[in-house]
Image (cartoon, rainbow, N blue to C red):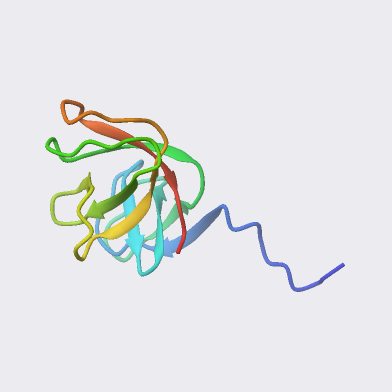
Length: 109
């Protein structure tokens, strides 16, 4: 058996790039996940990198199952707009424009 395995990597501890509340989206370079606790910018926070999570979305955006979901750090909302927004994952359920959240299966690039 290999002896260089460190951990499964389902949750990583990383410095918070900005202040975040538990359940908030954390984008640290190519790592995108969900904060498992509150943290000020620069403080260490545990970030879940797998699973399906419900996150707030832009009111105008709708998602079909399987659509790519991006994170707009300026608005703090999920969006369908690529631009400079980080990819959070894939819509796990449809979300109409009239809803305030989308369920996302996290994806790591």
